[in-house]
Image (cartoon, rainbow, N blue to C red; front, side, top):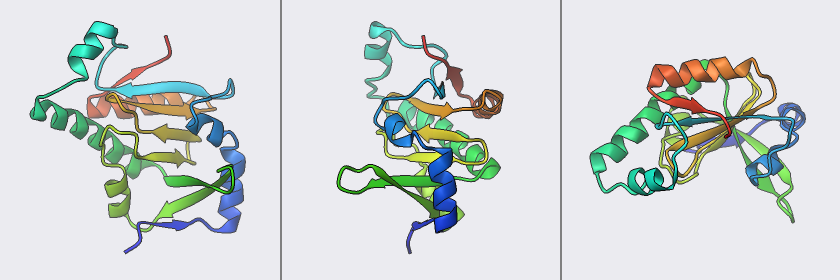
Length: 166
């Protein structure tokens, strides 16, 4: 069974307008039009020594614990807002194709934390872009500052922390 299907043309245009700078953000080039908020298992940005100690885990139980925190967080997102994923198509990968999920289970499967940057979604109801990170920290970009407390509450409810740029 397919996990995704393309959104209809009307919704495609709406999402293209709502997330017009998505390609830049996905390429790591966010603009001044977006707020940045990181969601992390850590309560602060790690310095070099901390990152060497805490990000190179050999303890399987700790890896599972961290992933489960994000899985709980993602479950809250799934239950509280609409979600679409996206792909870039075309000769220079400049065209965004938004896709909706075919079922709730496909959402959960897609948004299972792997800590290797696999999932990337938009949350149209709150105007946010959500990207899985590589270092036990995921990233949100959004244009409306009233979204920040919503994300912070979701993070708190799942045992995660929110960090802003240094």
